Image 1 (spheres, each protein chain N blue to C red):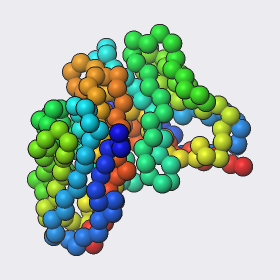
Image 2: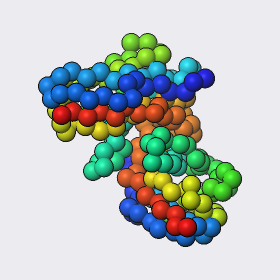
Image 3: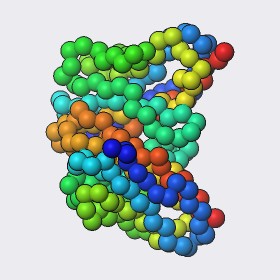
Length: 115
Length: 114
């Protein structure tokens, strides 16, 4: 069964520093997608970045990049030059491509950016 | 497109009452997901539909919960009778098919059962 694990319940980071949020996953499907979402205090779910299991290069979107290590089954989110507005809950998610199209989420990591 | 639209945004109801949450997915999206978010359990997938057909309802906590999708542009999640432990934020999300497509979320419905 597919599973997503985020082991960091909370993190405190100084503004302008880089942040790495951990995510490991488990699936037996060779075809899958990995996603990161941001949930600010206002509550909406904002899609940030996506990585496909067959992608050769790590995904990047502005200050967000995904450190994809397939053999380790990890998909860590890296935020460069953190800003106060990055303070939020961050969720890692996975969607299998063949046997099951459901999208499951990890428990999330609450990130606090300190001025 | 206006995105995924959920109503109501907030609902306060008394224990034992019926509650109906509504969702309008993005036009053209084949998949619709219902999630429940609580502090203790995080984001749980309750049920999801493909082309209006329920595919997996194993996340529905009890028979008190039911979901329907009568057409491609509307879905409901009903709780009858409601209990205080059902208090949570309920999200609806929709997506295109395939393992490489993200889900787009509605604003959520904050349900409080007193």
